[in-house]
Image 1 (cartoon, rainbow over the protein chains, first blue to last red):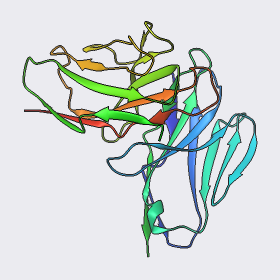
Image 2 (image 1 turned 45 degrees about the vertical axis):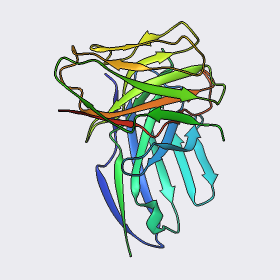
Image 3 (image 1 turned 120 degrees about the vertical axis):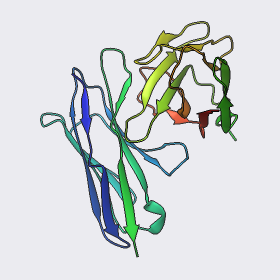
Image 4 (image 1 turned 60 degrees about the horizontal axis):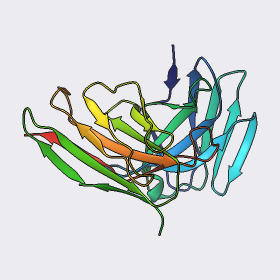
Amino acid sequence: GQNIDQPTEMTATEGAIVQINCTYQTSGFNGLFWYQQHAGEAPTFLSYNVLDGLEEKGRFSSFLSRSKGYSYLLLKELQMKDSASYLCAVRDDSNYQLIWGAGTKLIIKP
Amino acid sequence: DGGITQSPKYLFRKEGQNVTLSCEQNLNHDAMYWYRQDPGQGLRLIYYSQIVNDFQKGDIAEGYSVSREKKESFPLTVTSAQKNPTAFYLCASSRGVRSNQPQHFGDGTRLSIL
């Protein structure tokens, strides 16, 4: 079966670093996407990994290990505006459609 | 500015009524998608379209219908056969289904039952 697991909720402090994990079991793999979604709004694209390793983009980085079926999103220098849900999605290589995790709600405290 | 426009933002459906959600994009993307988002669940694919006049069912197509008569437009009809339509509906587009480029989303339509 297809399954994407993320923690339901995490709490972190403004200015700190937080790591949001995503594990997946899918029949095929053709890339992993991270999106940010503020409550009631559209998801916005953060990062894409298709090869093993770390992709850095400003305060956000994303890591992928295909052999372990594992990815994480690292957020540095947390700001209050980073309070949102973070969605992990894996692209299935059979039909190229995205399989979505339920999302991790990140709460930032001052 | 280029983007995806969904309308209306809020929609109410009566029992036995069909309703249509609008999705328009000016990004010149070939592929378009409809997702449903429920609390505590991942996005679930309803329908997708790779090109004009072609579309495929996603995981939860029952009770929904779509059309793709123009590249820019991909309306979704929620029919009376969909017994639990209350959800947040998101439309997305991308350059192509196989493209490494990400999907871009509209602001969503929240559908409720009267």
